[in-house]
Image (cartoon, rainbow, N blue to C red; front, side, top):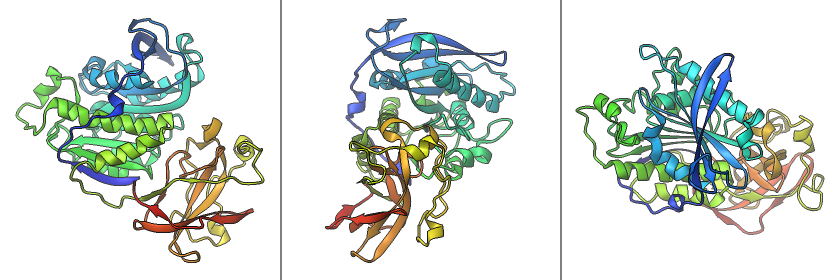
Amino acid sequence: MKHIVLFFSLMIASSCLLAQFDIGETSLQFNDAGRTINTDVCYPATAAGAGTPLASGQFPVIVFGHGFQLAPVDYDWVKDVLVPKGYIMILPRFSLNIFAPDHVRLGEDVAFILEEMFNNTPTFFAGAIEMKSAVMGHSMGGGVTYHAAANNPNVTTTVTFAAESNTSPTEVVSIAGNVTAPSLVIAGSNDCVSPNADDQIPIYNALGSPFKTYIEITGGSHCQFTDGSFTCSLGEFGCSTGTSEAAQHAAAITLACDWLAYYLQDDCPAFSDFLTTTTNSIYEDFASPINAKVKVFLQGAHNGTDMNTDLQTAGLLPMSEPYSSLGFMLSNAGANLGLSVPSLTGNNGIVDWVVVEARSTTTAVAESVVALVQKDGDVVATDGLSPVAFSTLTPGMYHVAVRHRNHLGVMTQNTVMLTAN
């Protein structure tokens, strides 16, 4: 998804605000080549408190980076919603040189934390890690998010609040093209610390992800993305706001929660909730794609229940789509496999490349896109998780066809409605 949404008002009751787990708390210390990274960790627990037992199950990991001269405690409004929904949330306490913080190194710290959680899991969390992750952050931590996510297959998605582009020694915009994970960029329209024209919008435009969304909360400020931090507010002195901190929190966390539920917990209705939320207010939508939910089984790969993922397992999936060379006219010709595709497992494992067509008649192809088919038959975008999206199609009634280079194609007998929702 690639669109820009502008919020004017937002008062939302969301299932994301309903708790499922208590919040357990602990701390972890990571050591990267002699450099110590101290973190606070909050996790789904059987009871609230320090060191309480983990709830049963496996949970995605979220690493959240705080702003300059701020601390994890300034983001309790994020933690208090996300952890009870079934996420392990790691909040590094960045060690900073206040005169010249090395944001690239901090991004390396975040990436190292994810690597350790996935491949050298601390004993306390053994068996509790689901191999999906989000990197999130505010202000400086937002800029660090993109340094951590660039060329990083361990990152499933990113979410930032008022991210700074002017990071040292490398600016975010110069590396954002290497961030291909689905990305949600949230800003406040009254941000005078990291003005959107200088930071948020250039970052959004530079991001390499084909599925990215930029949202401005009208009246929202830079520091209202914290829990009323006095330190942050000093730097924002004299700036105006047009909404309350509570309203800004509600808008941001509802959108982030639905986005994360879709990308980290395979909650398809959450994606619809996300889109519905953006249309509950006046908004501007530029080039929103038309989405299609498609399911198909390939006979050769079918094993009686689902499909085998032998090509992915053997490392034989073509890295670039194979259909342009066969004469297919594709709107996303030359698409490459998303960086996270080789690590997808279970029902999300990839069987092969396919072509999805939207046909205005049974013979007239309105738009054709290359996509991937998962083990359970879901047809998804080239990142391996997101919905199939048509970038030039207008909403309307279409026949949907799926084609494969080694199989006969199939098509819906009747037309179906395709919209951005």
